[in-house]
Image: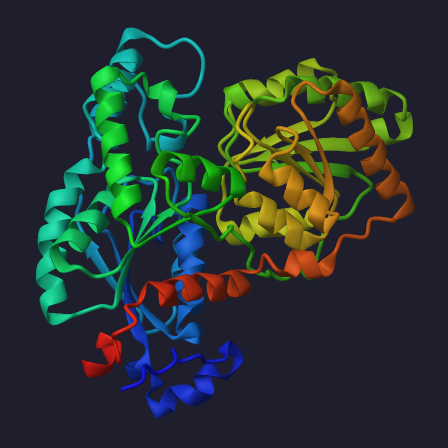
Length: 462
């Protein structure tokens, strides 16, 4: 019997066709993700929005996540974005972050993305980092792997799926996907939101030779056994392909349109806004100095200019900006995503900071910046993915961390746009990074994993 084409449902028509029970014709995909609402931050955004739109492209998602995750901050409002009827399985996890807090001598939650960053540390912090890098392999969520595999193997016996997706970091999620794939033979996609051993944070955890060997061995297993490997940028793609000797696909992060506030700020301030995480090892010190110098040449703008940080930003960075001569510097803590979006609309210029010597890092914030159609000032390695996206969409200017000439050119361009109103990005290019468009591409990769001999997805027989 000839294989039927995957069901394609136009997103705008989905509510009209749902009464026809086309949901039974969708293939089912199990998505294994540590980050899920009420988690806030960038880690949750990618698959939250893929899950929002997968039904429109023939896939019914089932989400497996933690019930008690150690999240750096919460954003309960994101739960409203999960479509009605999507099955979300939550299982408790044990994590050693309480021990990390005691060893570091700090209270509150810990952001794993900045656990190893910063300058000199005491012996307690050094011990915590050594344990993190040498004993907790591949990461502190490793204690969830075995219980999750046992639970999901039983679950899949009575709730079959057509495909499995694991998204990391944390890369323990990939090891759950690997074991399920080995046990069941279900096609499995490993989605790398960040690299594994090639990640710039990897060395900050000070792994010894044995830990390095174990991490690389597990990484190789995942890369070689997955039915498909996906990542978020061209440089990450090349790195993973060099490690594995196989083809790796790219589906970037993207944006979800969000409304402009009815009431916006008043006043004559010129706002340069940075939103997100910014650690001391990424502090663009030269940029602050050149910015202050250029503002001195434009005294009318100098007195109106305000630099605002929103998010988990090392306190030394705003101080560095002030020391460089910037007069109005504000640092606001991380906030719910909807509130952050309102603040983004109020900006005149948007600041993006990459990672020195790592051209493959493209932060999720870039894509929300693109949606706003405001000038983006990027400090990232020349020739990197962020710079290429900005150039292709005519959405801003990039300069290297130590490129004085490039930074001056960038600021001249930005101030010119503010004065003339002549900023004209490429709308079609920007629209290609919408979450709905990217979900169509991800659904196509899921379709490509399906065995040619399968006449019907298992979800049709439920």
